[in-house]
Image (cartoon, rainbow, N blue to C red; front, side, top):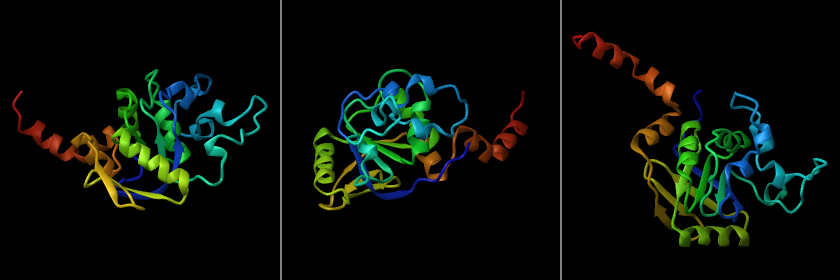
Length: 198
């Protein structure tokens, strides 16, 4: 399933300054019955967003109108816990295209890259600057430049570089998942097969 191409994203951010946010908090297990990637955004951080009677918890950041944007700011060790890919689906389906943290769980990072969510890992110091700037002014914008692999805090011009696997970078720039990539090089595969003796 293809997703939106990712090139340069300029957006405000939603701050969630909590460490060790695990996948069960991102998408509780009771919502894992569906097998398609749609509809999970409604249950993103479900138990933090809603009371047991399904009324919104006013103090949770996703329920505060002052914060919005396509970038989610998370604390250290974001996406730990189980390997459920539904957590990345929920982040994407809610509308986030990038998650910024000082450390990601490896499986969650991979799941994000597979569905079009860019995990940007920065230093703890730079992450704190972003949190502070966003808390002081919710209109603070970040620029995520995937071609240059650079994140910039636009209010100050401060930036850091981030790492990404070359194959995954190319896929995100083109909006490919793994199947799309193979289909895109189908002719090359066929030519190789025709010219390779058994």
